[in-house]
Length: 378
Image (cartoon, rainbow, N blue to C red):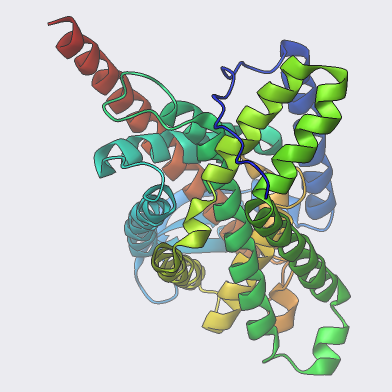
């Protein structure tokens, strides 16, 4: 019978070298430039950027923001009420995203919802705006701090919950993509092989990732024992540091041993993505794009699949490229000014939302840290 390995304290987390950060930014900018070029080469750029923005009425007589060309013709218009409704949807989406993280943390640590909200706001902004998923480290780093108004959560454990969140998200959304594609006639679907290839690739990647996480959790003792043997032969100190990180990371996967917490997360995630897709559909209708609601879910799912590729800052380029990838399946012209304006408008709305919430979260977090410091000093 093997002897249980003692729990190790993980080493302090340090920032990556500046050169590595710069290389990631350059790579992210290159990815963004590539996708922007790829999508924009077929866009009607003269129509999109050759007009004037103004307020007017759309085809239904509603007050709208519109682009008018030099001849006075309307290139596209978006109902202002659709913008307001989508802003409400984005607020609901933010809270659902915060709430569904709580069940993943509860088996390991109790973090007040107020703290989760401000950490989530900053973290979601970082994930969206920073290249190559650099922002994924933000939430675990913020939870690991002393004096944040709650018991610190070890960085590797927090990172484990983020990894699990990403993997389950990917599997659920990929499954949704397969479901909505069932409504497409096989002959139509055959004309868009990139959608099917992306769906199968996404399923393979996320299923393999989930298998790896479960194997790490189930074979914890085996993993730690062989890590110590292999690395210990080279450097006992390095072996202990790695074991500390692996132990904490596996602790972050503890929710997999609690079916009730997994059910809570999956339930909230289903609602989260359900609201997401409905918001995309309503926003498209605001531009006068008539498409079935399943088309919005297909677009949303393709964006998630596209995020497997290293992203550019603010997901520029890749966001609207993958968003419009399945448009033709539903008879939507992905090169029309109206459709392109919808894609760019959706990207801008989401970017603005995470930036505003993230700035607020940074301010609220600074105040909370200062208040905690004053209380400890007093």
